[in-house]
Length: 227
Image 1 (cartoon, helix red, strand yellow):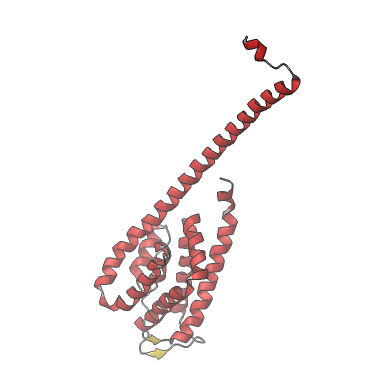
Image 2 (cartoon, one colour; image 1 turned 90 degrees about the horizontal axis):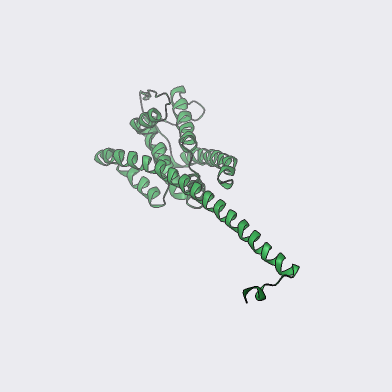
């Protein structure tokens, strides 16, 4: 009968027990995998929510920028960066050098102190990097600090990794945007700066930004790898 099919050999018994034990281990591994996948999915959703926050902010400012014809040339450069999928928060901060309202809005939302920049050269002059007005120096320093902070403050693994990749593979379109902003800024305060000199500054600034993003990314990336 049924007992006749029972194999009482030790080898068969061991195999049966091992199968049950192995099945239990697989079950635990599956549970752990599901738990980690759910945690990672939740983190990704949080990342996407942060990105959308700046997408909406960028959209609201774009309307104002489009209506103001003086920004037409910069708008083309901005759109070129958007087409390459540069993150909205980063592009907003770059533009903030020439649009103080953007700077004030994001600094307020990040609980950072706002500032007033109202310097204008009394007459048109050529840019001289050996004699830079203190207000201009401070304004540019804050601009660079803000571009670092806006990425690190509400850190997103996804957008930061994408930004670093873009710095490596789509730098030319960003350089053009940066230079346009830089030239526009100085022109608005009656200072002329040529594109070659602008590029020298922008190349240094973008290098510092990339270094800061990469250092922070690799220092905190371990949190994702542990999920």
